[in-house]
Length: 221
Figure 1 (cartoon, rainbow, N blue to C red):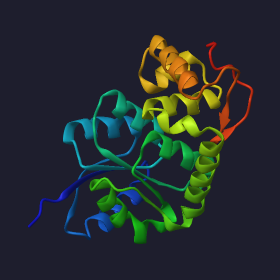
Figure 2 (figure 1 turned 90 degrees about the vertical axis):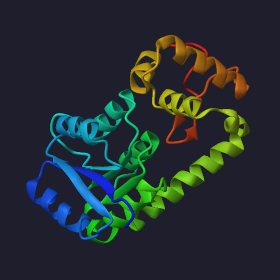
Figure 3 (figure 1 turned 180 degrees about the horizontal axis):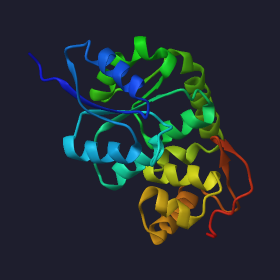
């Protein structure tokens, strides 16, 4: 028998945690090694058990799902993360994808989707609830439009792309450094390299992957 996929779940509602355990462990290839009722406990349990996949609610006490993911990244704990949430808003979905989560499942789709999502995440493949496919298509469309307007985007590294998106969201160099766990000086280097690669000599801003001139690229705040 193949080794089981180890899972940790985090949700502040005991009934949800119980239901998740029943749904997930109905598949014999999955096993829940721990469950948390808040974000801080989730981080501790994940660090202790090192599961293959963490299934996190976004709205949790002490640390929300986004904060948990950022803390895991800061500690360099390499596991796959799935968000199981009630949030179907595009802005929340975009932030989750930008953070690098492998799965995004709406709670009203959990019964049919959560097991497949966990298995996909464990194998490194992304999975989102089918009802959110329009959001993913919108994201791809905006990316394609932006690449046409700024063809040099393919030259940017993954970190530079993250920095560019944060610049577009009006984040300062200090805020970007704190979010990506890099120094202010490193952010400035990324800014310079982005402008050079995109041949930008004026100003640039991106909002939801759409260009808009309003942010000075070579001057930090």
